[in-house]
Length: 528
Ligand SMILES: Cc1cc2nc3c(=O)[nH]c(=O)nc-3n(C[C@H](O)[C@H](O)[C@H](O)COP(=O)(O)OP(=O)(O)OC[C@H]3O[C@@H](n4cnc5c(N)ncnc54)[C@H](O)[C@@H]3O)c2cc1C
Image (cartoon, rainbow, N blue to C red; front, side, top):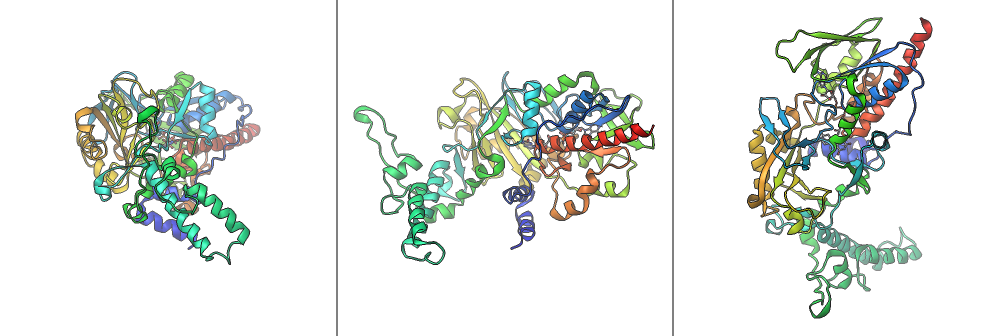
C-alpha cells in the first residue's frame, strides 16, 4: 500500500492523533530541523517588528529580533505569556468559551499541564531556550513497566501491568518465530548461519528457555515479574509467575499500549521543566518584560507599503476604546483557528491557507488526590497507564517521588470523538466522569479524590483547538503559501511547521520566519 493511502486510511478510521503518530513513524512528521543557534546579525537601523501572540513561537521571534536590535512590540490576548505552554496551579482562574469559570484548587507546589507536558531529547530548539533562560529540567517518565494497560473487555476489566503484557507478547512472538525457523520455513529468506543468530537473539529478546519456548520459569519471570518477588532469609523464596496465553494477549488488545513509548518522540530521554511546563513561557515572559502588552486582543490587521498596523482591544477594561500598534514588519503567531476570524488584508493564497487548516480537539483533566496512592499502594512512579475508556490515559507525576501528602495526576487525555463528547460537558461533569472512569483502574479514586480541573481545547478562547492537523493534500496545496511572506506579514507557530503539536514546531517555524524577515528588512533598508 502506498504511504499516502495508508495515512489516509489511518486518518479516516482513527483520527488525526493516530494519523500524526503514523506520520511520525513513517518519518514524515517528527524530526526537528533545528541546527543550533543561528544569530540573525544586526537589524537595519530603526527597523521595527510587531509580534502577534506571546506563545513559544511569538516569544522566540521577539527574543531573537530584540537581541538583533529590532524595535519589538508583542500583543498578547491573555494576561500571561506562554499561550498553550501553560501550567495551572492553586488559585489560578480560567474562563472557557461558553462562560464556565474554573478556579484551580490544588495545594501549594502542585500543578497540572493542560497543554504540553513533555520534551523529547531531540527537540533541540526548545531545549536550547530552556538552557538560555535558566529553566531547570528533570526526566519525564513516559514508559513505566509497572503502570497499567486496561480494557473493559479484557480480563474481566482487571488492569494488567505493562511489563506482563509486553513480556508475554514479545515472548510468544519470539517462540512462534523460533518454531518457523526450526521447521525450515525461512530457508529461502535467511541463510542457515543467520538463522542460528536469529534463534539466539530470539531467545534473549523473548526470554525463551533453552528449547526456545516461552514458559513459566525464572527466565520469563525475570522479564514479566514474579508471582512473589525474591527476598531474603526463610521467607525469601520467589514464586515464578504464569505467562498469559497468546490468545488472551491478542484478544485483549492491550498490546496496543506497547508502541506509544517506542515512537521517536516518546523515546528515552524525555524532559519536563521542574515545576510545570509553564515555567518556559513564564521565563520568556520575564525576559521580554515590557515588550509584551498583555490583555491585548488583536481584532484587525492591516498592511500597506510602509508597515503593518494591528488594532486591538484591552480585555482588562470593559469599555476601553480600540487602540493600534504599528511597525515595519509583522510576525503573526495567532493560531489559525483564531486568525481566520480576524480581518487581515493578505492575498488569497495566504487567506486560503489560513482557512484550510482544521484543529484537533482534545481534553485534559487534572485530578488532585489526598495521597499518592499510585506510589504507596501500586508502586507506580511516573509513567502512563492506558485504557480503552474515554479517558484514554492516566499519567502519574514524574516528580516528588515518595513525598507524603497530596498529589496531582493527569486523569484524562483524550482525542477525537471522546474529546468532543467531554467538550460538550460542563467542567464539573468532565472531572466527575474522569473520576468515575478512572476508578475502574484505581479503585482508590472515589475515596481519595480531592478536586479537579478540566480543559477542553476547543473551548479555549485563545487557541480554539489543540493543534492544526494537516492532511497530505492540504499541506501540498497550502503549506508553502502559509509560510511565505505576504507583503510585510509572515506567519509562524506550530501550524507553520512539520512538527505540529510540538513546541519544537513553534521554535523552528519562528526562527525560519525571522531569518527571512531579516533578509527582507536588510534588502528594504539598502534601498532607502
Ligand atoms: C493538549 C496538548 C498537548 C500538547 N503536548 C505537547 C507536548 O507534550 N510537548 C510539546 O512540545 N508540545 C505539545 N503540545 C503542542 C504545543 O503546546 C504547541 O505546539 C505550542 O505550544 C504552540 O505554540 P505557538 O506559539 O505556536 O502557539 P500558541 O501557544 O497558541 O501561541 C499563540 C498566542 O497567540 C495568542 N492569541 C490568540 N488570539 C489572539 C488575539 N486575537 N490577539 C492577540 N493574541 C492572541 C494566544 O493567547 C497565544 O499566547 C501540546 C498541545 C496541546 C494543546
